[in-house]
Image (tube, rainbow, N blue to C red; front, top):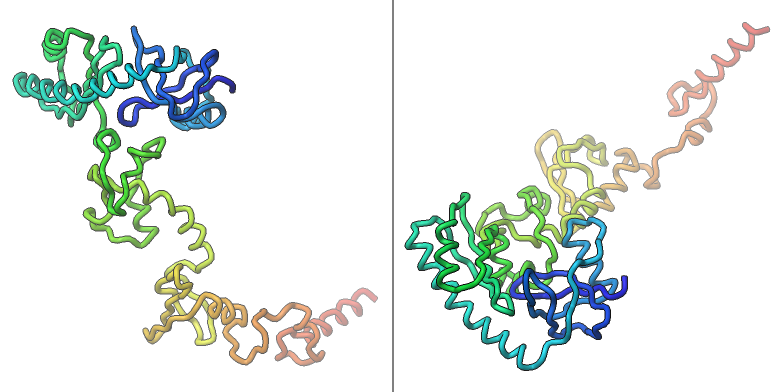
Length: 321
C-alpha cells in the first residue's frame, strides 16, 4: 500500500497515517492531523512494513486505509518546541496529582502528554476500579485552559509507557519493540521448568515476563521428541518408568520396579526400545514380520509360529476338496 506510514509519539503511542504528496523517511519528524488540531511525531516505518505493523497492533484484522494524513515535514524550530513541551509535561503531571489528592480519588497519575498545538492534554492513570473524575476534569480544564482527556491504562501498559530495565540488563521489550502485550500464563513457566517464585519470573510491572512466550514453541517442539513422564517403556533392563527428561542434555531418567534409577541419553533409549528390551539383538530395529515367517515350519515356539499357520492352511484345503 503506497503512502502508508507509522508515526510514533510519546512513549509507546503509535498511529498510522497517509503520506501521499509528502516525501518522508524513517526518522523524520512530521506534522500530522490530530483530533481537532495538529500533532508532531517521528516516522518509524513506511510502506509494507508500516502496514504489517499496524495490522499487528489491530489484533490481526485487515488494515484499512488511515483516515488521517501527514501534513508536512516539521521545521527545526518546531522540533525544539516539542522538546520544551516534553519538559513541561512533568509539571502538568505533578499538578494533576495534586488535584487528584485534593478530590480524594483512588487513582495513580502515571504520565501526561501535550498535543503539539496544545489544544489537548492527555493524562494517563491507573486505578483498581472505575473512578468518577468528572469534577477533576473540570478543575484541570480551568487550570490548563485546554481539553483534558483522562485515559485509564493497565499496569503492564504503565511499564511500557515509563520504560525500565529488565532482569536481562536490557531495556524492557514492551517499551522498545514489542507491538502488542499478549497475556502470559504460569503454564509457560511450568513447561520451561523455570522456578515458580514470582520474584524470579516477574517483570518490572509485577506481572509475568513477556519473554516467557519467546521460546515456548521451541520447548513444545523439543519435548515432542521425548516420552511423556510417567510412561512405562520396555528397555534392556525390563519394564521401566520415565521419571524426568532433560531436553538440553537430551537425557532421560528411568526407574525400574525395584526403585533404582538410571540416566540414559535419548539415542540410547530409542535404541533399547527399538530392540524390544532384548540385549542380544544385533540391530536396533525391531524384528519385521517377514523375519518371523522365515522360521522353520512345524516349530510352534518360533516367533513366526509357521508350523501352526501351515497346518491350519492344510486343514482348510482338505475341507474345500
